[in-house]
Length: 279
Image (cartoon, rainbow, N blue to C red; front, side, top):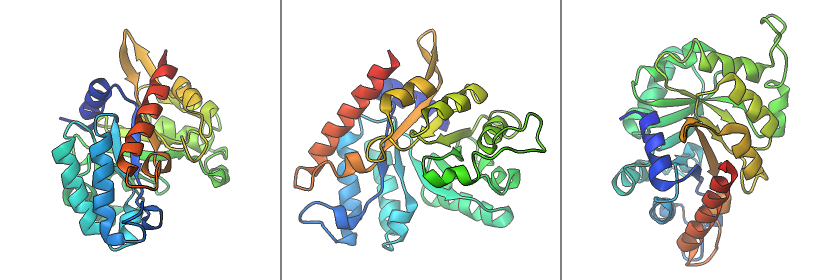
């Protein structure tokens, strides 16, 4: 089963467009765990178990594990997600961006060591920084396209004078990902929820690619505007998938012992909000 198959299946089975981002910060853990990096697995596993039937995907951010020397806990968590939520694809948020043998090693890390179904990549170094990941047939790769941070304008919103039509850089990336780079239908794009007009522009350029959309929740993105800009259907079937990520709003919905139950409540609330926006 390919990443796209899993994505479609999870959308149908869980009736969800919500992705829960797993960005564990021990300083924000609930009482009894707070400040204890050895409890990263325990915290994340509880969130996964509480939300597994509410999401289209999970997205662990590798830096939050590596910063605390918790890569072994990430390995355990990846295996745990496969056991308790085999129907839910896992996107490893790594934002790798290198070439040649180094990119090949990063691909081994993502797909063989951690067993991810997809990975996030920076396309700044071009096609040969993406190609090694596409050798893993059935796996997904999401290219940074129009990110939600203010500094994204520094490069992504600049026009390319030597490309026909002088598209903005993010528009050019979207066109490459929909077209010549997408050899096996494995590519998707990362587009921030804080720019709904640009989500709509990316969707026009890449009508069938899955869009991974961070920025909803704590970052202030408008969930309804996000869905209307990016989600597309035809005859009741999704033709333009969206994966709307929320991390902090779900993870830290409560600082007490009820943190997992509170995370589930927030996940259900966000899922229902996103579904209502499809109508």
